[in-house]
Image (cartoon, rainbow, N blue to C red; front, side):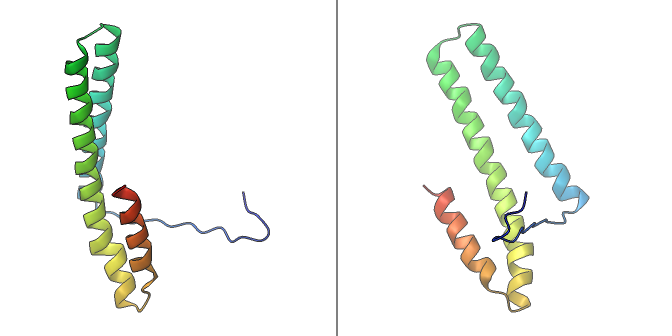
Length: 101
């Protein structure tokens, strides 16, 4: 929906087939890990065992973020800087502040 006082901005990123494949494989792996944790809870597994699996998911998400962030910097940010648009640098800095909370 579009507010009359605000512009609707839609950003997209073109990824290579290989990049998309890597990202989707990581997400599917994380999805499987989450289902495993759900099963552990249903089966009343020992709390520390569940916590270790949650840690593994957290690490997998961090790994996904690193891959995506690297791609974003190499493509989107670099392209905008080369065309004289330094707004992406500010956007990147704000995003990094949020990620590092």
